[in-house]
Every structure is written in structure tokens, then in C-alpha cells.
Amino acid sequence: MTIGKSPDRDNRRSSAGKTGSVPGRDGSDGTPAAPEPADEGPSIGRVLSGARIEAGLTVDQVSTSTRVRVPIVHAIEEDDFGRCGGDFYARGHIRSIAKAVGIDGDVLVARYDAAHGGAPATKRPSQLLDTGPIKVTDRRGPNWTVAMVAAICAVVALIGFNLVNGKTGVSGTGSASAPLPSGSGTGSVAAASPSVQPPAPAPSVAAIAAAPADKVTVKLVAEKDASWVSAVDGNGKSLYQNNVEPGQDQTFTDAKQIKLVIGNAGAVHVYVNGKDLGPAGKDGQVVHVTYTPGDPQAG
Image 1 (cartoon, rainbow, N blue to C red):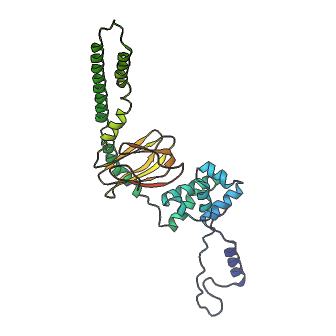
Image 2 (image 1 turned 180 degrees about the horizontal axis):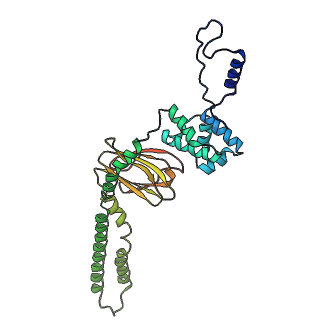
Image 3 (image 1 turned 90 degrees about the vertical axis):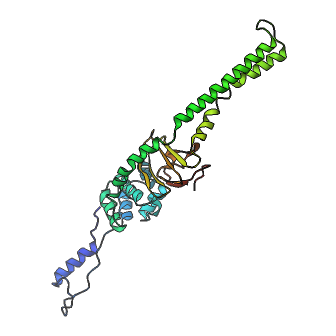
């Protein structure tokens, strides 16, 4: 498919050559003629739609190969980029769809940038460099080691307390070789059982208590797929703006709030102030959330 060439424009040039008219004049009294409007060719959506039809692909097939949802593919082919979630995602969707239908996506992205104020070529790298030290500091912010040590000490103290109580109950009922009454046997079993059961809830309680009460702590874990993540603190400072690959995690802490934009919400597991909130959303969904100190609640 040829982009930017119009048959009407070629016909006008052909008729002008036959009549011998001078370009820029009307040929009658020498008065300069009005300039003809520039023909920019078909829109980005029409180019992608035409290329998809020529390639013999359906919208569902393009959505499967690019992982761009069907409603967004339809919107882009109708030149409605508002459903993409911003210019960053719109450029990525245009490149992915163009690659799937077999055309040059860079040309279409350049046209998109020209119509929407240009691409931020130098902004993102500088932000990524600025977030390096903050990312390392945030990893060391929540002191999970102290929380686990406290939980283990609590479990050991509880077990020791139960063992002491169990020995006292046994010595009060008589020697080990003497048969115990049925009531005493029941009491000894009841005294011994708490030494095994209580440790289960102790780590979760200690882990929640380890989160500072006057700060908000957000931990993101990419489980089954990668996702683009942007994090901003309560003063509007960018903390992180990059992809989180499967198996990786990022932790952010601030005294006021943490604002997040998650590009693939279904792939990211969220923990806020020590509580497991589960996945941030559905696969492919773009989520904007804000968390503050105290009981986690998305704003």
C-alpha cells in the first residue's frame, strides 16, 4: 500500500500540463491562485485496517498475535486513540498492529507523533536514570528480616511456655509409669496441642505489624507475565517507570501516598502495608491506583 499519494493530485498535474498553465497562477489575468491543500493520504486507522484486510486477517487474529484487546484494535482502526491509555501505549499498539499486518510501524508512529505533539525522546531515559538509587533504597526500606526474627522469637517463646505448662501438668498427676485417669489424659493432650497450632498465624501478624503505621508501603510482584509500571510519590516525584519482568518485584514507600499506573494489571500481584490485595486487575487492563498509610484502600 502506498501512503501519501492521491490519484486526484496526479490528475490535476496532468490537466495543468495539457493546458499549459503556469503553476501558482490561474492562467487568465496573472493573479496568484490560492495554494492547494496538502494531501496527507489515508489516516493511520485506515492504513492499518486496509493492510489487515489485504493480509487476510481478522481483528480477532490481530488481537491474538499482538495481545492488544479487540475493542482497542477497533478503536485504533477508527482513529480513536483515547482508549489506548496514553501516547506511550498508543505508539506501542500502532507498532504491534503494523508488524502483525506487514507494514512499517515507524512511519505510522512518526505520523502519530506529528499529530499529537511529538515523541518524548529524552524524557524517559533521564527518568530511568534518576530512579536507580531510589529503587535500591526502597528495597531496603521494609525491614522484613526484623519482622521474621520477631515472629520466630514469639513462636519459640510460645512453645517454651506450653512445654513448661505441660511438664507441670504431668508432674502433678503422678509418675510416668503410673496409669493416668481419663480426665488427666485429656488435660495433657489439650495442653500439648497449642504448642503445634499457634505458630501458623504468627508470621502474618508480625509481617503486618512490620509495615510502618505512618507510611504507605506498596510491593508489586510480576508473577506470570511482564508489565509496565509507573510509580509517583506524594510530592509528585517519579519513583519508577519501567517494565517489571516475570519473577521480579518492586517496593515503594512514602509518608503520604503512592500513585501507580500498571499497564498489565492481571500480571501484577499487589501487597499494601503488609496485606495481600491479589492481582491489580485483569490481563491487559491499564489500572491507575493510589494508596495511602493505614488500611490499604485504592484511591
